[in-house]
Length: 406
Image (cartoon, rainbow, N blue to C red; front, top):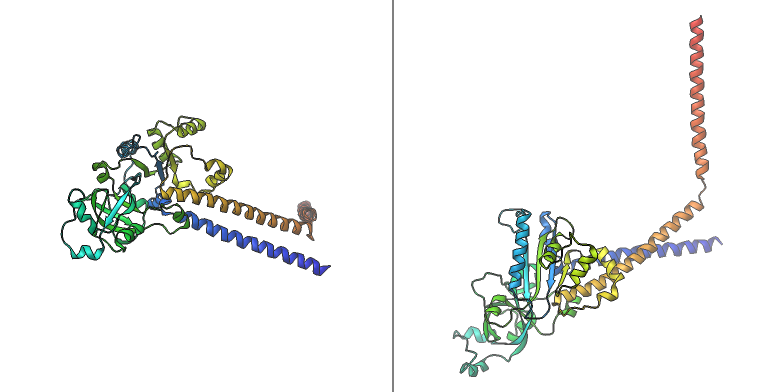
């Protein structure tokens, strides 16, 4: 009988230890997954000076008649006015109070370029893309489908893609025809990733390669990344060329001293006031907007993930005509996976707590002492000491009286 009890206790101990180990591993995986996407951690990187910030993303419908890049200027004006009214100042001289970036709807076109060796041998100007120049177009490699994405602001601050060669492009550069290729488009056009300074044509515009990047290595990003390679160019050159001026995503990192302060600035711009309206009115007003506004800062927090679990089916349906960029699709896949991991952590954690409570309960039931006995001992001990103290005090008083009468 004792051997059977020992075996049962041993099995329980093994189960408990295994559950604790599994819980620890899940927590480590959960933490790593939350930090794996750099596009969702801009607020944390920006908050290194101790000031609390929030990262807000706005996703617009794929309709050129609704929102152009001029919308960015209007939002920036609204944010600046709010910052001025609240007297926000940079933490240090030369720093910025807030930061933003935006990208346009991908414009699918064809691109062609000569190999690096051919371009290094020839110093002649690039051929024209119309008229007689079309005959010289044969000197280029075959054309490939690409997505031209116009970017502005500090785009590569929000999306610090790994540089394989060269540099990023920045707003305000002297030349607008510089471009950043992803690894796939670089190999398609030049059969190499080391092609800084090389020239290529896309949408009848001559571009110069500033750098080559590699997208995030996470599996969720690979699943969401488009099949057509991406070439990042200045949004201004697409606007001037009347090719594409339709904004897809606007992102900003704004001071957030109280919860939802930063998001409320954007909602107020679109006519929804979170401060003076009820939660239901705010939710309804936000749902009626043609765009989707997301607070990326807390999207992987435990309350948000728990809410995502409760509304799991609803989150799969997007009623608005919006095509998300690949990083947002990756974030949504990550949210679904994190929700499942979080649910598993809750279940395993609850099992561990229950086992601990059962163990404590059994220790209590099998105890050799009783609280009642312990209280009685303390009571007797205290009562005995009090009686002895009173007896000693009485005797001392009696002795004092006897000496007085003598």
